[in-house]
Image 1 (cartoon, one colour):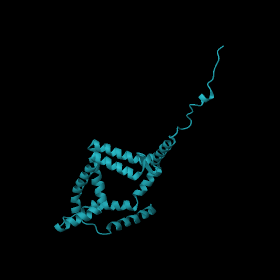
Image 2 (cartoon, one colour):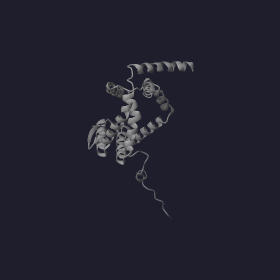
Image 3 (spheres, helix red, strand yellow):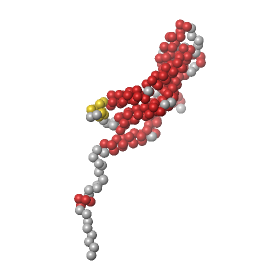
Image 4 (spheres, one colour):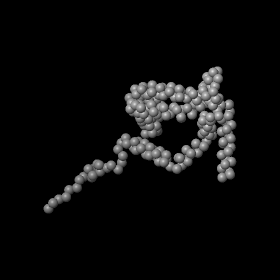
Length: 215
């Protein structure tokens, strides 16, 4: 007669994987928080809030600024004594326009022109993403057993990566080239009157509620 033997109860419950392994609970919580963040980006409420922020007073001011920058009636040939004051005044006034229209495309073109720059950019994004995404609840990062504040650790690592990949010199070249490209516009554009943008932005803000009431 064949006998059936059962394994001891200690062996049966030895391979119980119903509970997370020690040290993995925090990683699971971090992964869950990243998933929740991605889900919130895909919701309709997130994009509705983004659309509302675009219609704010600051966005209206930038819209007015861009309209003035492209208005051909506000261009004129400057006298020799007016060139430097125009460049300085318009340089500060239209700095957001120059950054978006000239600086960002030149920076992206410079970044994509070299594999080293792309690797450095991905490494920097990964560093900040790890510190403020996966380790968002931690106040510091442990480097060689020493707790370092996250801004200091990420800033130091980013500076080191930028030096190793030549990103600083590349971006400096892009900034100088962008200034040269924006220089004719700053010299030929008339200096905006003080308060002109604020008054027009206020008029636009007053027109939005009136339009909504009429609708």
